[in-house]
Length: 104
Ligand code: SF4
Image (cartoon, helix red, strand yellow):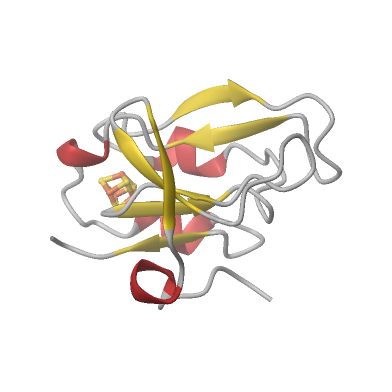
């Protein structure tokens, strides 16, 4: 199952990271929540495939190390979500449907 497209209202913001919100629950290192609002990445689904980083034309993502997470030990962090041009390339290439993009 992929990211919940209703996470912006269904989940609570529990912290900020690199200028974006983090939607809980968060219980590091095993549960990391969803990073970003415009470009949401479910860190608990992300498997560090990296296709989104390659596909994004405006460099929204940057690797973030997550040692001890059961799925993968790094995640595509949407540090630059404000730059998103809504091309949906990342959504389309993600093999595990970890990304949901919604214009503000
Ligand atoms: S929708 Fe396009 S511009 Fe926005 S983060 Fe994804 S790949 Fe980058």
